[in-house]
Every structure is written in structure tokens, then in C-alpha cells.
Image 1 (cartoon, rainbow, N blue to C red):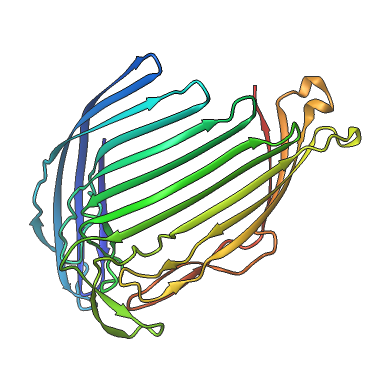
Image 2: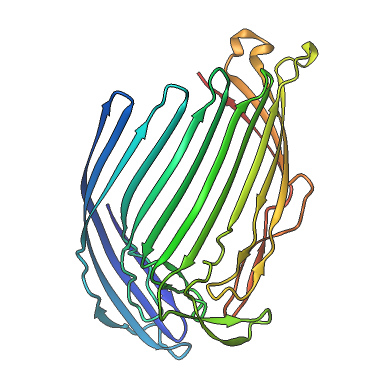
Amino acid sequence: GSASALSAAKCPTRQAARGSFFQEGVYFQDQIKFHRLSVLLGGRQDWVNEHNTFYSGYHYPEIDYSQPMTKGQGGGESPSHFTWRAGLTYNFDFGLTPYFSYATSFVPQPSVTNYAGQQVAPLTGKQFEAGLKYLIPHTDVFLTAAAYHIEENHYAASDNEHEGYERDWGKVVSKGVELSANANITKNLHLTASYSFNDTRFASNGVLAEKIDVYGNSTGYVSVKGKNIGQAPRNMANLFIDYTPPVKSLKGFGFNFGIRYVGFTYADSANSIKVPDFTLFDLGAHYDFANLMPSLKGLRAQLSISNLTDKRYLASCTLGSAPQCQYGQARRLYGNLSYSW
């Protein structure tokens, strides 16, 4: 597809950029199955073409907006890249399914430019993942576990020294584990639970970030190598229980309860300030209208309350010349009516 953009920044100069972006590609995928073994192979070739024109003016506010700005041509980019993936899965007859996969990635970043007006290079990466899926025989209990290792180059994130801009932070490495359980404990009680651990850190040498205190004052520069990426929680967990009472007078009604936990994050790439973790509670109820009238089968109403205790918490914080934090969603009551067939 194609896209164009026009943007302006008032300080230190009035600048604008207009660009076009076009991406096309071809891909293939094949799945091979031999007895209990499944093999997945795929590849994709991408071609990208973009062209940018930059305009610049005088120092704000002395600029005369009625006068044309100086025009300059940006470098036209035409990168191409081939990515591929492969996976193996084996199904044992007792419900266990181990798997392994490897994949590479390519993501152009046409709208990401740094303070100097240079476009950040495409994001490229590779991922290893291995895991287990287990359906316990003669039960409705499904368990999964996965471990992964991801490397990405040209990771773009906020530039704390220049508000409103991003920069290339080089290479980042993510390592983590994900666990989940989905089970019908009884005919009327359903449980869903998950936990994830994600350790995401900068891995490039020679990349520095400004360390800032809670008042926005600089305390010097530090290497970001080994630092955690800002706004990325290391631990997350949730538990959700849905219960349908086997009581005739409540036939069609169901109730659910959930707990969500999000671990601490850092406010910036220098890991200057830690944003506290938080735990939230949710509550809900639903009704299946088929129990009222057979012709209404598929019609369902649900009422939910998120952040039941109306807890005040910090969802994220950012640092720079104007440090700021954002509160998370307060208590919210919402309902919906759905129909499926």
C-alpha cells in the first residue's frame, strides 16, 4: 500500500516532511505431516520503496509563515529483505505435544525519524521458541508452557533528550517464559490462568542514555547495555474464574471474577525511576437468553466491572525535559449484548 505524512515541529526550527511509502512482497508456506510429526516451512520476500522531501524554515517564532520554506530531498530508500520460518511439532498419543520454531522478521519503520531528521532503519530480528502443550487425558484441562529468545536490531523508542522524537537504540534481546492453563474444573466451573516472565534488555555497546532524577534533573549519562527497556513489565499474571450456579432459579446466569497483576516497569532507557507494580480485580455476570425462550438461542448479555476497588495506580511514566506519569483506568462499568449463530 502507500501512505503520505505531513508533520511540523516548532522548535528549534519549523520543519516539515512529506513522504511516500510502498511495500510489496511474496510469500510461501508448506506444511508436511508424517505420522505424528508435523513440519512447517515458510518464506517471504519484501521490497520497500519510499521517498521523502524535507522542508525547513527559520527559528520559531520569527518565521514568516507566508514565505515558502527551503526544500530539500531526502534519500530514497529501496531495501529488500528475505525472511523465513520453520517449525516442528510432534503429537504423542498421551496428549503431550512438544514443538520448536525459528523465525526471522523484517519491519520497515517509515514514520520513525530521529532528531536529526534521519529515518530509523528497518527493524530486523530472529526468534527461537520451544514449548509444550498438554491435554490431560480424559479431562478438560489444557496446559501450555513456552520459552523464547528474541533478538531485534534497530529498536526504535522515545528519545528522552528530545521530546516528541524517537531514536535507534540498536540491538535488544528478549528472553522469557509463558505458562497458561485452561480448565473446566467441573461442569459449572471454568478456570483460565496465565503467567509470563519477559526480560527485555538493550544489548548494544556505546549507546548512552541520560539518567534523570524525579525532579527532571540530569545526573549524567550511562551505558544502556544490560538495562531494561522502559515501560516493559517483567512479570504479568492473571486468573479468571467463571461459575454457572446449578440452581434452577438462576438457570442461564453466570458469574465471573478475575485478578490481574502487572509487575514494575522502568520509566526510561537509563532505568532512572521504577514504576510500582499493581494488582487489579474484575467482576462480571452474564445471562444466556436461550433459558428464557428457545428461539433466543445465541443471544447473550454481559455486565462487567473492571478495577473493582477503583484502585489508583500508575500505568506508566516517561522522563525527559517534562517528566510525566499516567494513571491507569479507574473503575469501569460496561455491558454488552451479543448474538452468535
